[in-house]
Amino acid sequence: MTLPAPAQVKTLKIDGIDVGGRADQTILEVAREHNIHIPTLCHLDGLTDIGACRLCLVEIKGVKKLIPACTTFVDEGMEITTNSERLIKYRQMILELLMSERNHICSVCVTNGHCDLQSLTQELGVTHVRFPYRYPMLSVDASHDRFVIDQNRCILCTRCVRVCDEIEGAHTWDIMGRGIKSQVMTDLNQPWGSSDTCTSCGKCVQVCPTGALSEKGKSVSEMSKRRQFLPYLTAMREGRE
Image (cartoon, one colour):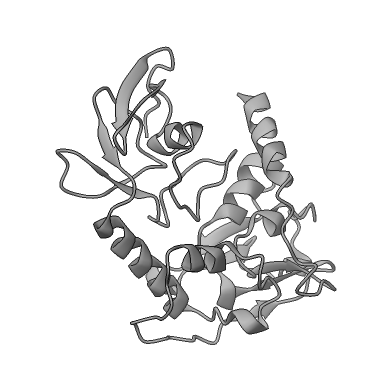
């Protein structure tokens, strides 16, 4: 997306509330500044937004299709709805599709109780999945000395790819394959433990919203992601710009 001039101030309505924001702010940023909650999964403060998960879809008056709040800049006179019956149904369907695509059985996951996907299903009232479970037999790479990647838990939000590229500067992670066969990979699909570019910083593990990336030797109660890491990411990114 092309960044507008930041000096311009836009006035708009979000959920009927008059708000203002800079022209270079997204709907999500302005909403959060005014304590208006919009659910997200792929968004992370300090990383480039890609609009991949589509959970932050909102309605804009006069626009038929739903719009991702994380990649849409505010504009003068916008009238935005962030929480409607239509949006809730779409968000529930997205979560159901994510849950059905791979193995997300919480009771045997190391991040049970500390998982963003799990929290959102509870928040949005997803009590069952209407779609057939695929349960693909994907790989678990435990070749790294400290970390593990379980592809069965990955939701392809690419937080790990972006933090490794934009903050750490290593670009160890990337995506291979297409569509439902997509997977994250290290280097050119080499085992993580033999990666020449990985600095073992662990940023990818801390930003992962599920149990796809975890630390070795941590129990379920210990494998909470360090949320104080997020302001650090933001400060790092702002320092570069």
